[in-house]
Image (spheres, each protein chain N blue to C red):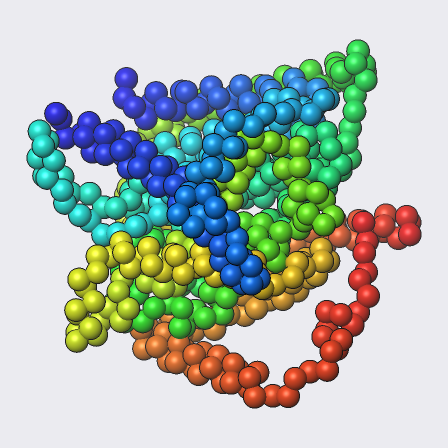
Length: 183
Length: 393
C-alpha cells in the first residue's frame, strides 16, 4: 500500500473517532477537544490530497480561531451535568430519525457520485489548473486558489462575505440587546 | 544506504533533534541573560554566585525544576491538566520545521558521502508562512486548558484573558505578514528572503509600519511584558500556570522562550533579510561575506531577543481594556491601511518599494527628531491617564 493511502485511512479513522468523541463525551470541554482533533485530522487529509493551502486555512480558521471562541464560551457558561441525568431527554427518537435521514441523503449522493468524481479527479486537476491559471503564474497551490477565487468565482465569493457580515451584525445586535437588559 | 531513506528519514530526524536541543539550550541560557540584563537595567547585580559570575545559574535552575515535586491540585481535570503543557510546547517546536536558518550547505560525511541540504528542520514549504500562523495559533489551547483544568480561579481568569488576547492580536499580525507577502509575491519564507536580495532593500524600510505591527503583536502573542496580562503577578498570582510546578511549569517556560525565538526569527526573515548580510547588493561590502549566513541570522535574532528583554525592563503593564483597545482600535486599522499603501508600492515593483522605504524612513527619523526636540509634556496629561476605564463584563 502506498504511503499517502495509508495516511488517508489512518487520519480518516482519527477524524471519525474524534467525531464520535464529540457526541459521546459528557463534559462540553472534552467534546470541544475531540472536535479540535477532528479538525486537525481533516487538515491532514487535505495535505494528503495536496491541498496545502486549504489545510493551513482549516487549521488557522477552524482550529485556531473558531474552536478557541467555542472553548471560551463553554468555559464562561460552565455547564455542569448531574451524574445519571438522561443524556438526550425526549429528543432521542427524533435525533435518531433525523440522523438516519441525513445519512441516507449524504450516503446516496456520495455513492452515486463517487465513481464520476473519481474519474474526473484522475483527469481533471492538472489540466484544469493549467487551463485556469495559464502559463503566466507559477502553479502553486495558494496561487491557484486565489486565481480561481478572484477570477472565476468572484461573485459567489463576495456574496458569501456579505452573508457573513450580515450574520456578524445580527449577532452583535442580539448581543447588545441582552446586555442592555442586564444593565 | 538508499538516498530516499537518507533524505526523507535520517536528515530530517537529525535536524529535528539538533533543533530541539539548540532551542532548549538557548532558552536556558536566555533565562540567565534575561536576568542579568534586567538587573543591569534596574541597577542591581542579578544572579552572580553559581559558576563564574553566575554563568551556571541556568543549569542550577534546570536541576531545581526537574527535581521539584510535580503537583496536581485536588479536583483538577487531571488529563487536561497534564495535557496542557504539551499542547503549548508541541506547536512552539513544530514551527521550527519551516523556519529557514540558512541557504543550502554541503557536508561530506564518513560512510555516506557528500550531502547537500538546506539549513532547515524540514523543507521550503510553499505555504510556509500560512503554516506558521496556523500552527502557532494552536498553542493557545494549552494555555486555555491549563487555566481551566487547574480548578483555580486565578488560573481560569488567566486562561480566559489569554484566549481573548491571542485571538485579538492574531488579526493585526496576519495583516502585517500579508504586507510582507505582497512585497515578496510569495508565501515561501526562502522566496521572501530571495525577494529582499532582488529588491535590494530589506522589507523593514517599505514595511516599517507592518514590522511595527508585527513585532507588537508578536510580543502580545508570546504573553510578554507589557502584554503579559494572562500571567499578571500583581492580580492573578501567575495566571494560567499558577497551579503548575516542577517540570510541567518548566515546559510552559520553555515554550514561552521557544515562541520568542520563533517571533524573532520570523521578524528577521520577513523584514530584516533573514540570513542575508546588510546591503546584499552593494559589491564593495562583499568582505562582509566572510561571516557565514547563519551567523548573520543569529545576530539579528539575538538583537530581537534583547529587545524583548529591554521591553520587559522598560514598559509598565497594560490594563486589560487598554490592551483590547490597542489591538482592535489602533493596530488593526493601522495594519489595514498600511496594506493598501504597500499594495500600491508593490504594484510599482522594486522601485516603488525603495521609494516607499525612503519616504517612511525619512518620516520616521523626522518623527524621532521632533519627539526629541519638543518640550516635555506636563505630568498626568497622557491620553491613557485621563479617561477612567469603562469595564463591561
